[in-house]
Amino acid sequence: MSAYQQNISSLEQTLKAQGSAWNAISAEYAARMQLQNRFKTGLDIAQYTADIMREDMAAYDADSAQYTQSLGCWHGFIGQQKLIAIKKHFGSTKRRYLYLSGWMIAALRSEFGPQPDQSMHEKTAVPALIEELYTFLRQADARELGGLFRELDDARAADDQAKAAAIQTKIDNFETHVVPIIADIDAGFGNAEATYLLAKKMIEAGACAIQIENQVSDEKQCGHQDGKVTVPHADFLAKINAVRYAFLELGIENGIIVARTDSLGAGLTKQIAVTNEPGDLGDLYNAFLDGDYIESAADIQNGDVVVKANGKLLKPKRLQSGLFQFKKGSGVDRVVLDCITSLQHGADLLWIETEKPHVGQIAEMVDRIRAVVPNAKLVYNNSPSFNWTLNFRQQVFDAWQADGKDVTAYDRAKLMSVDYDTTDLALEADERIRTFQADGAKRAGIFHHLITLPTYHTAALSTDNLAKEYFGAAGMLGYVKGVQRQEIRQGIACVKHQNMSGSDIGDDHKEYFAGEAALKAGGKDNTMNQF
Image 1 (tube, one colour):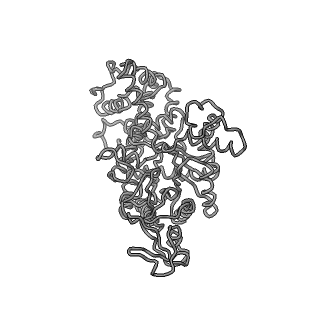
Image 2: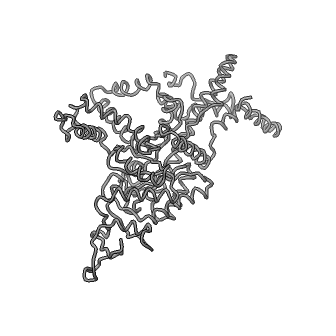
Image 3: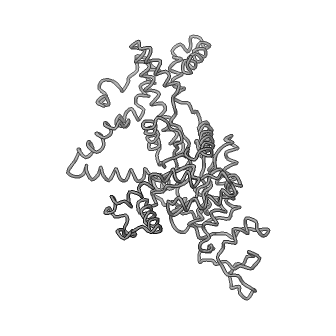
């Protein structure tokens, strides 16, 4: 007996035990509704997806070709359509996740309107979006299974037992659209207690992986902008501990913490670290401070701060803002220390925010980290903040020049020009972009590749193209030719937008609840039948 039939049989026993009072209830319809709502709570989702991520991490440790990917999303519908597209084109959601970007919440979900990525948006928007994403993914399950149930009914009505058996097998082997979400908690939106409280809400909404960064919460900046300020390791580790306690309290013992370091591009700190003895974490942090070594109290001016570092008295340079500077060129060393420290104190994955997508640069840091923590793995931001075309063309230019190859036909500063698009240099650069994720997984320890803001940009691009056509000479043809015709020919499910919004699911339920008396929307006069 199939799992589907076993569930029906179990429910038949439940109904039978109620006597005639539940005679109107169909065991098969109830079984269908149970399958369409497999995940009852966000914690069910968090546990299910944490197990998936742990399995994927182990698979990557065994074979770096088994890296994972995700795309950032700012609305449940966007996340849903990604997973529907993944199942359509690849048949499986395996090793494909979603990323919840704090940048996109700030820019697109705040009640204040568009905000910069500085943790000024409502913190409640973060768990709310996680819940919304999983609501839409669960609806995608219900929609696809509903289609299979209708096909099963049609096969039975036609007395096609072979087709009915094949459909029942599809139902038994149905793969959910629910996948892990790596969720951005920024710098924790406050102190460690605030971090813990928000992490709990995120986990309860379904998050199995929480990404937290080592910036000062109330000075937080986008990782690809200037003015970033980091915190001493003790402060950051307290927030990692807070997230771990949140996972454990809620029973998700294998929850994943992604520790992000912004130290490569952060030249400032708000605090001088507490240190109790030479060589401890506080002392190592303070050793990166820029300043002057002094000999006596005569070298101290009003308001100066002096610390003992490297066995000497150091007067750190302090800006008018009260912030302290790090030594120029110390970013890589600080990143390595951040990463090793985070992994040794409870983090599971690393995120190194860089200023360019360069496998060699990332690998140099990861090699140093792995010399201490051999299984260190990264989540890497394939950011739209990078000019990928220019970066990779310049990388090829530099590599060719270093190899003694003639590059006089190219102007390094103007390699973005369309004039270079068909050149050998541009073609090699495009190939490096194509293989960047596989190369990074193999050489630089990148377990998970994500693009933070893809649908922000695709929405802008497609809307610009539609507006140009529709409000121009093309008129309605601008929509029909550029959108609807493409949806039909490419088999985009949303062309039947009533179905996508749940109309057919509602019709099914009406029939379950009222039988032949149900007033359904999907009759012969429904214009969706044109598709």
